[in-house]
Image (cartoon, rainbow, N blue to C red; front, side):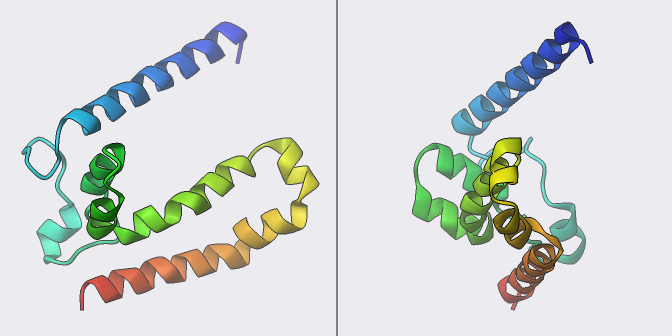
Length: 126
């Protein structure tokens, strides 16, 4: 991909993310009808692991951490892990700490994360 195309892609992604953050900051998903509702909850009546994420994100943007946690504790708890994953995407970090990267994001870690998500799904619907 050429420099101009790469710049355009990054620019468009930045614009999209800025608009999305602005919308989630200014509009409360729990009070507006145009935000997507969970199709899994609509079909089954059960909360999926992502239910409440839009409302939690809105509350996070307003620094209401406790309220965000109430809407979706898994999402809020996963933020440091995701941040670490982003850091480990940098080549120099990944090469400097390969064992730590493998331990935190390897096949075994993927199974643990999947198990946590499934356990969360079951517990929140008891």
